[in-house]
Amino acid sequence: MRRALLLAAPIALAGVLLAGCNDTDGAKPAASAATSVAPAGNGVEALEATEILTKAKDALGKAGSYRIKGEMTENKMKLDIRVAGKDIVGTITMGGASIDLLSVGGATYFKADEAFWTSQMGEQGAALGKLVGTKWIKVPADNKEFGDFFKIADVNELLKPEGTIGKGKVETINGASAIALTEGAEKGSLYVATTGEPYPLRLAGPAGEGQIDFTDFGAKFDELKAPAEADVFDLGALMK
Image (tube, rainbow, N blue to C red; front, side, top):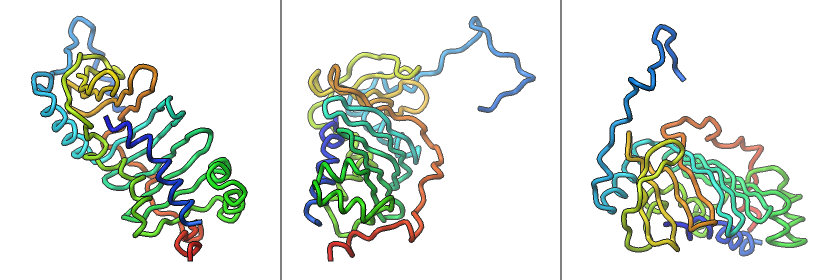
């Protein structure tokens, strides 16, 4: 479920580059195990698979912000992305190369390490990496290919099934009860919380291929801000 989207993102970026060159209360004792109450179910477990998916997408959208973090072992890709509306900030590492992403107010930026530049463009990439240094590269607004990289912030894209989905088992994901939505063993599963808000909690690939967890729902990410002008390198100007 959306595994292809996540795995294809670095390829899309490469194409662009090559083409362009606790709150506690001490007065209250902790509840004992005998008196503790299990979290109330949210009802999604009884719904059809497509209805559960709709609930999960709605809950994620209402949260406003969240974090996705994990690793897909097939492509040796790791990602840690924070999302707030259509804005995102985070890092993707693949094959030893690292890319930082930033999208704020409709403007998109990225910066990459030396390993990325060299792996994608050889000596030319190494030279470009030295020219750019540690600055953010601003991507032209009309660059559609690079825009695909930021679809990870789009709930409808991120949780869009590639085929017919069904209901799997209820399992515990990061301490919370969640029901699996599946497209078959070869496609992996999306786990949706069955208590509290029906948030998507995990995208799991087929056995051994890794997973991506959703956390920090409704959090405020202070790092989501536009870089200073002096820290930006204009890719459009370079291409001209």
